[in-house]
Length: 215
Image (cartoon, rainbow, N blue to C red):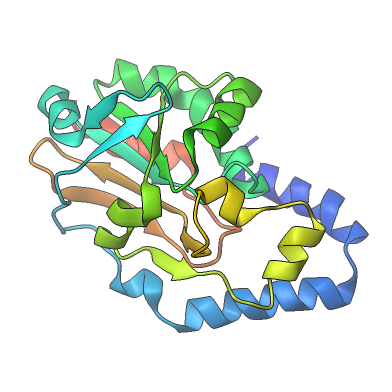
């Protein structure tokens, strides 16, 4: 089953239990974000990424330059452990992670979540790749991915038990739009999937096809 199929199945099972008025608020907020053009302004194929470093959940600093010295790098920006679509994506990425390594590449996922929240994801999905904590979305901002969660959504998130300030460790309500990049050893983006609609994600098979071109 593809990630798109997993997402479709999730929506069919979960959306039927959500009132239409609530779904309308979610959809309007997504449409509003898409209309800002944030995805079009973000870093994309052909651009060069900033050389950054972030800490993993163990507190070890991971330098992107060190990873690039070893081979291409897949970078996945996600919203947080609370996001069901991010969880589906993580499960899918973990499945292909052995192939990513066989192709000589690295995989890191980045979010504003504090390490204690990211640890839950690692345990839940038995993740064997690094989750990096991007405090205050500093790196995501350099990629042009950051937005402020619409005020109409905040009470709904709280109703569903989602505490963004607790997850991120600040009161900004800033989040990155989901994005997937493949970076070559020189730091150039050779593949980008950026969409302000958080319900759509890069298909893992597409990532593998890009990485195979390096071999």
